[in-house]
Image (cartoon, rainbow, N blue to C red; front, side, top):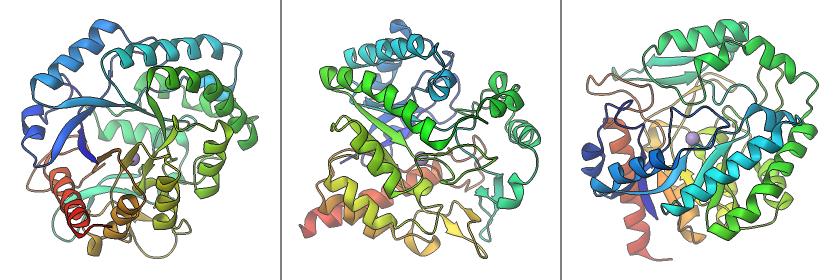
Length: 357
Ligand SMILES: [Mn+2]
């Protein structure tokens, strides 16, 4: 297991690599290029610059999150072949600098969805939350709302230029059923996975966040059966999952521990996002709690145990954290609570290792 933390680059991240390096147990940064338009090939000199910056700080750059998928690929438009070719070229370039895992998602229009960016908790910290009532407004209003609350920070998957056309984007999906979206993912994977096998990079699809349909958009990475379909559709260890416990865990009907165990055993989890969520009231409304099990609705020990017992040897990051100790910055991506999360998960892992199987 290798513990990592996401890093947004020196231009966009106030959390510096030297701080990340000081968190015990962390060996790598999870990076991406944020100034390359979705669908373009990543320029080699920028990839090399990012690698140099990370390694100069004593960290590894073996996981990339994300190389985003152009909307035309998800929609299955004739122009998709050009974008898939570009994607393949980016994979080849990332292999040259030693990247081992690429995280991506196949969510239409919105990469992830939270309705609250600074939901106050009793202890005075704030966190991101998802309330059903928050998506009862129009998608245009919601997009505006999220973007205006985050002025000045890069929100991956929430490019303002793209979301200016949110109405049109949603309209394009009206004729795309879940079965169509699955076919489009299959088409993409059939082209990309053979290249991944050749250059030794594992693809890890990130689940839908939240793991059910919003605004009538199709969703195909929601639960155990969806993950099973994806793994079988191109049956290769290079076609894997970024197992995000916070996303799959936002549907109380998903059995998180069993699903982690199954896919770790099938060797399909090259990368895991581990965080807790707390359901409030009835239904699926929830906030992102501290990682520690008693603060959330999921058992972090059992999740780590399921990974350990089933031979997991991939990368983990603590995913999001709350804002604590007066820190301000990009919601979910402060330093302090993610560091606590990383340390807690590393501690669990140490116990599992010393206890043995
Ligand atoms: Mn995640």
